[in-house]
Image 1 (cartoon, rainbow, N blue to C red):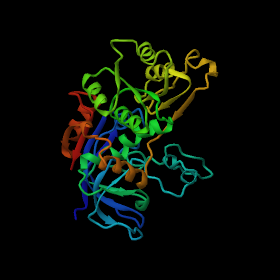
Image 2 (cartoon, rainbow, N blue to C red):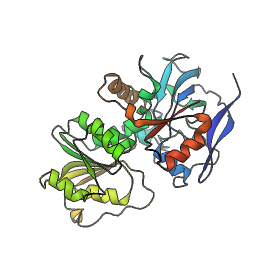
Image 3 (spheres, one colour):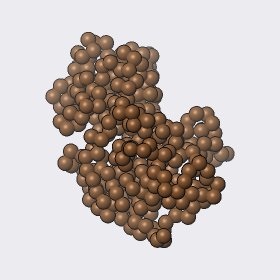
Image 4 (cartoon, rainbow, N blue to C red):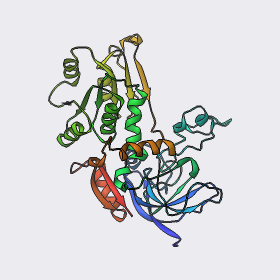
Length: 358
């Protein structure tokens, strides 16, 4: 086995390059997986632009699909050669946050205080998946076996995008018969649209302006798609709901304007479920918030991880309840990752998600 591997490394803001790094050593609870497919996330673009800080020299990426190359001495229940995924969030399973049921927030939990986003380690605090090999910590908590018959691309959305989108409607407590508006039909918004349908929503309204995304939104479960460049989205959603407003609004872009509009279309007592990654302070408009007296609920969610979450998501794919294949619009070799970043960061050529293969 070679001693080095190719990896996409953060050098400085606006510069992620392909470089050579040592293949990681495997500790007792770890697993080394050989990456067969991975992808680029919108969060990686925040890292690229310097909007989210990570250490220089870090390997980026948090959406791995691969084959077990080597298992730690204490890892049981798996065999080398098995096809697996690991979630973007890799909880330890034994931290204070995990034991409180918030695996995504698996932080330090020490006298030094809780570290937010502690469960997000790949491409954040440890080397990530845009490489030929990936070291998975706490392997028995995080490795999920891929069902026979599913391709890499079929499960590629499970580690992050599908888990995040679904969690937006789960946290919003969408119920049978609900009306749901989902702002931005990018990859996460499209998965939220599919998730809302699975949860029993009977009117799903997608909001976007890119024709290709609006078409896919209908395929993923949207009953109506509102083009915010042609109509006022608040007025149009109120018209579609006969002035009632929506039970749940999902903000899947991470911008002040979409957050504010999502708040304005809520019914009294409705829920704003925020999935966006924000780059600055948010302001809550007094009138839309009804001075804090509207019985609204605002909730945020970080992508759930762990092997059980991954198993459930792959079961959804395997049962053909949801088809995420339309989300993979472009394919690149790992050697061409800088070109892939340029395309994805500038949202050219109708890109939704890229598949990267070492």
